[in-house]
Figure (cartoon, rainbow, N blue to C red):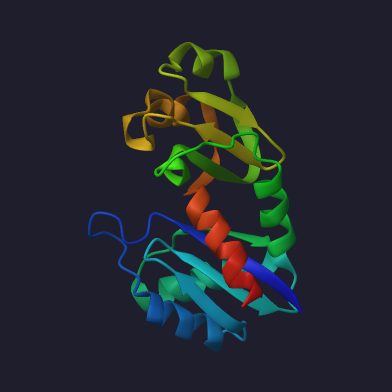
Length: 178
């Protein structure tokens, strides 16, 4: 069996697209996805399956749609893919809030547009970014919420993205080993 990590975009944000994690775990189990575990309320799950990765996002979102009335964007990556993305991260911040300074933005499907020069013109206060294989890395030393690059990113990188900070990525990798 392959260990997978599912990342949902836009659930439990501002009171919208409410998805209780307990219910989601039960839904994943009902779909035949084994040993489902979730992490925090933002739509992160680890599970095991013999199914092909390509079939899983549609399966998961169809179930959420049927049970909860909305269909979030769902990224499903193997544990190996997430581990490789984490290991390829070019930023190693220090300090108490280091985990909040680096975000991995997982890309689903094709990139429609990418303008690194436009993004570079917006970068201030030490912000940096790097395009990896299937992942856009963003370093925001002042915090993601204060980042102009993060705010304007959809104008310069048109793709289906979902972002996770370092702590979440590291925790999901750890959770996959439990």
